[in-house]
Image 1 (tube, helix red, strand yellow):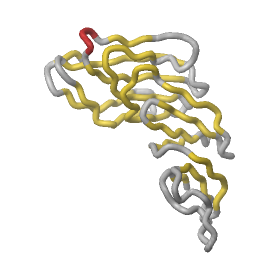
Image 2 (image 1 turned 90 degrees about the vertical axis):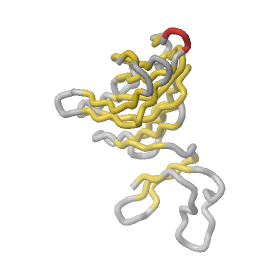
Image 3 (image 1 turned 90 degrees about the horizontal axis):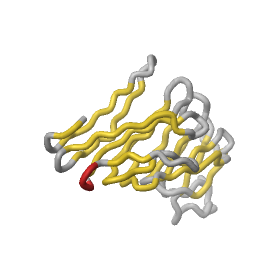
Image 4 (image 1 turned 30 degrees about the vertical axis):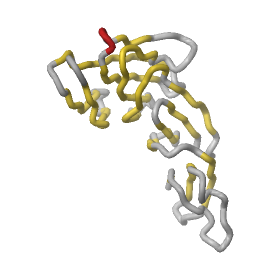
Length: 171
């Protein structure tokens, strides 16, 4: 069980120190605390390899089964990461929204998505399990574009992305 919220992790009379801080914790099947760390309130995704992804706003953190943070990656120019999913090979798919320009390369390289005239759009990017960029794409509407945070990766690698377009645009 993984949790990410405000609570006292110690079920006894002692206070664990997490009452006023946001945290990320793992408990075993019996409910015993395995590990805990402070972390911003966000979304969680667990892949089949045991990697725990914690994502909030423009940052993705990856933890191993022991709670060690393997990496923390941020997008330059993203409004928010709305969804994160992984496939059977451990590839990571991130989707979200941005305005004008977004660098989707989490590492030292630069791979920019650019929407004309400062429009708002959505993006999807694919990374390998070591956070190296494999592919990216974007879509935008004429005046506005909202993405309902829903992405699904099929067993055969097909990507299903659900969005909502406010005005006529380019998908």
